[in-house]
Length: 295
Image (tube, rainbow, N blue to C red; front, side, top):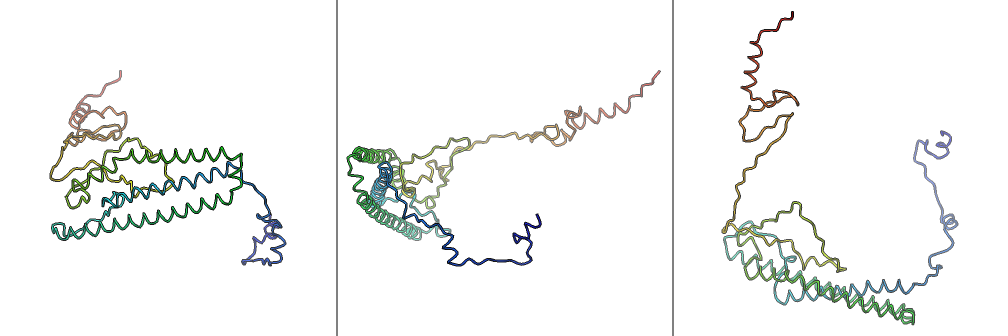
């Protein structure tokens, strides 16, 4: 073993290096390259690749449409709203108006640049689709590929309809945004409201259907809850008295019991259920009892 470590250089006192020249590296490298490998994409592979591009085109188109509608209506979705609240000047209406105006401008500018980026991505995606179809025009126009192309068009049409139906079913998001504006609850800090988070223990988690190939959380954010409790309206306060109990070495002591009622005893002791006074009386009676004589 020592001979192996010596020949491997593991016993050297200093860090030894080796030098590989370019000529040696060229002689070691594999002579073939990936350009020499011939591969013909099947119609099924082309179908899957083109399907991804077509779906992304639909996603970007609908995403830009919905955000543009929000912007034209001058309604800011919850995902685009500024969460920062002022720490001073809340009693000054002029200051609050300026704060809200700046926050609104920031949100609207965000929406504009997002729509602009979506438009750029859409243009790039359409160009990618055209390049893909031109580079595989022979395979895509073949007689054997006709059924795949027909199936592709049907799948894209079905995908678009399902996505529109999915967004239409989430019309409550639009209603929530309209509710915030009609009830002046866009910025909760100015109305003095406090949001109460829902009880989430043992709550079954539901996942959002994965229709989109892009992230649309900015427009469809549901981070705010609908349950709100205002300081002016108050609310129902439940005065439930909870009895907390903890087992300590075999004795259970309730928080409502006076101290000293249950003392520390070993698990299984007969004095575990006796109070301090009862145990004292028992000890006195035990000492006063005369010893039993053996005959």
